[in-house]
Amino acid sequence: MTFEDLKLLPQILSALKTKGYLKPTPIQEKSIPPILDGMDICGSAQTGTGKTAAFALPMLQLLHIGRASQRKGIKSLILAPTRELAQQISDNFKDYGKGLNLKHCVIYGGVSQHGQTNTLKAGVDIVIATPGRLLDLMNQGFVHLNAIEFFVLDEVDRMLDMGFINDIKKIIAKLPAKKQTLFFSATMPPEIKKLSDTLLKNPVIVQTAPVSTAAVTVQQYVYHVKTDRKRDLLAYLLGKENKPHVLVFTRTKRGADKLAKGLTADGITAEAIHGNKSQNARQRALNRFKDRTISMLIATDVASRGLDITEISHVINFDLPEEAETYIHRIGRTGRAGAAGVAISFCAPDERGQLRDINKLTKNIEIISDQPYDASAASEEPRKQNGQSKGRKGGGSKRNFSGNSGGSGRKPSGNQGSWRGGRTNDRSYR
Ligand code: AMP
Image (tube, rainbow, N blue to C red):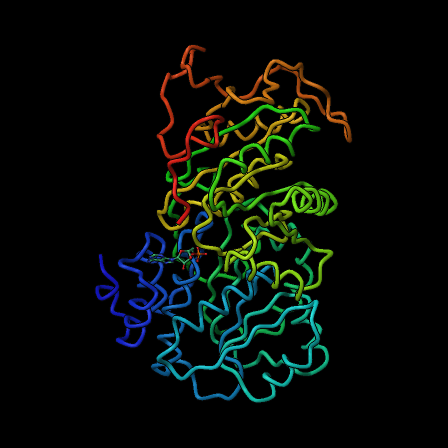
């Protein structure tokens, strides 16, 4: 299928060509036609699947051809959980809607509201917002939602995780009854199902891949290592690379700062982003990572949500996440839209329970044992903070690269060589 087959406007087709998109992704194929037909959508799609364009393209088209009534005011509202995701959606709207005369603005907290209120006063068709600041501006009388015709809730599960449920309900209460609603969530636990049932009218269900599967283009490796040697292992792996462009996840904000500081002292250009940093500092670090001024971005889960950075060669889980599904979201930062990627996880003896949970979702994690800090033989320790040790030692099918430990014997493809220790790097990071 091509974008032309989806009956998109020439201006939109031309914008997609400029972006270099050759054909629609599965979620775009499945969502664009029903949205153009005015249907509600309930979509669950893996991160990095092209979900934003799936709702943005038909919405832009319908707004442009004037399906929306001539009532004055904001016609479309898109709610997203984080500032970064809101900004990224806004960037996409700018690119996709280049040839159309539609105005949009992005609203989030952590920055002065002045610029946002000025843009709102000048009049916009589309508002992309995080719930807290939007509600704040609504309460101050800067935002009126009575003309809304399209309502998008993006990454609903994450919004609920972040405690936005009451804000979202207050916002929904101000929306007109008649509107087209597009609802996206990676997971559909009962609370979210209930919310979608109250919001959506005869929705088309769009599911592209089971939520708990990692993108097939991501190769996944785990290194068993003691906590106090993780930094050494990271430096060891990085030292073998020419132009690393790596997104690293830590469990805590403090851990992210500490690691960034340590790596900087080691001469590796790294910056941390997390919720305690101002929006401007986060955006600055993100820009410096995108333009490759720094080679490494260290993030916590909340800060990383929705980051769209192309060409991340590696995602490194410096700490394993508490929730197995977070692992899938994290590694979705690499291998986006079909590109190849590598995900490397460091597993300390007290994280093996988490690794076992992750292995239940994705069976494809290869254990790398030929590395100088290997602690796979170390006994499992109980978790320090909450004492949850889940018993059995191990986690995942044990394989090493000599292929003699009862595994598949498969050697990973050569382009990962230097990340396993000692081999020549034959991967170019561009
Ligand atoms: P998203 O899931 O919306 O965050 O998109 C993930 C990445 O895929 C972004 O970098 C998009 O620019 C890119 N993308 C979206 N649609 C396509 C497409 N049809 N072809 C190639 N890349 C795409």
